[in-house]
Image 1: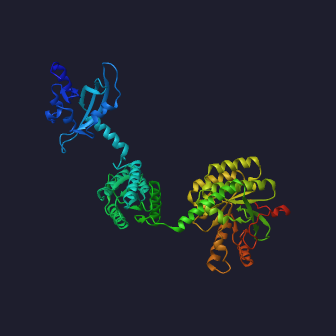
Image 2: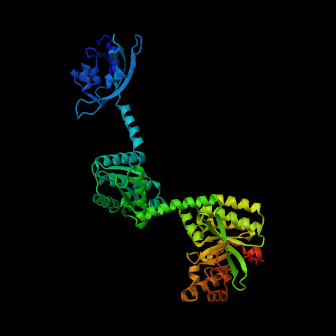
Image 3: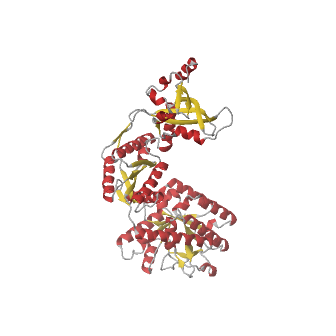
Length: 564
């Protein structure tokens, strides 16, 4: 290209651009004047031909010819447009100059590219922006480490590589202990500073080739390539020490934290990314439960795996039993301590099995609670209890509900609709909550109690004495009945300590005008003691255990008097 238009060439140069004409047949390139100001570090000889210029191009030297070959030729004199981006580097130590090339190519008689002309311009700023956007899409903005998506992708690649090379690596989850306390004490900005500093400390302990990422709020994920079990143990202690041995300076003052680590050997125990992550999380949770600031390495556990298979089976059995209406109720009598006349019946859950046998509450409730099914069971028992109250106007029933159910809005919806459908049933219903629930949040539980009392129902605290509820809290909650934990009752005939404890509870409850029920009454001697101490009601083996039979169908009931 000649200097016929020197002014236009100068304008292009001032914009960081240069025009070119490339004779592809001879491979000669002619450039506009001032091309040297656009490419000041590129020797003139490297600009004279396509072959010489391509030697400077990254990442693919053939990118210019490939662009022409991959675009379909256009018919007519205007040629076929194309646009490409590439880097130019004059030496291995020189920085990359990012180029945007826009032009058209023209076909020869054979239809193949014969010549091209266009403009190149330096585009370092745009490439830097693109690099920054790419980095932000891959990295956590707080720590600068890989984000979870790309960490897990790197883990999947590592597992595939270790399987192919028959080597061993490790995946760690490092969780900062008690970060919520830092949030509460100093604020989220200080907690963020702690997280960022922990990331730096872990980074400082890495080997070349290890991969670090932020897995979640207080957790970092770490891939240790070519790492044996011994290496993993050594590395874990190195990371833990680096975190705990020096306080973290923040704007609110120094903060001291520890971290716990759960790790898994891959690919031996993690054959894919999901399995490795899940097992590392499980191991980290176990380490934290055992002791903050500790390390645990995942190992096979026959008992744990067997229990999980049981959990799966029992979950299916409970759900199936609910669907097939095989969750039924059994009724255990609670009698007046003096007259031994029935006062009310505790409604206990049973699950009928295909062989005609029934699983009892102790077999069902703990499993249902652990597996998150207890609210479904509680819903069913509530339906059974209210249905029984509706057809038996002289009976009173009590039922236990789990901690989760006390705050379950669906349970409230059910009981409200049932109370509206069966007026008067609520006045003969006693709801038992455990002592541990009563002390979790007094205000929330008081709201729960108030709503039940609006239906005319009474509240009993079950297993009283096993926790730390004060009688002041019982009064504040408006509790009607206290059921003394059977663990203290069953041995009162032989244990002076249990006798003193139970007698004190009964005396305090009577002074507060709260009725008492003694559970697990085994023998007549214990029943006489309880009656003499002023206990109002007793239940247990002496009186009769739970049965699906309905004794009130053949006898007249004695109704429990209102509390107070």
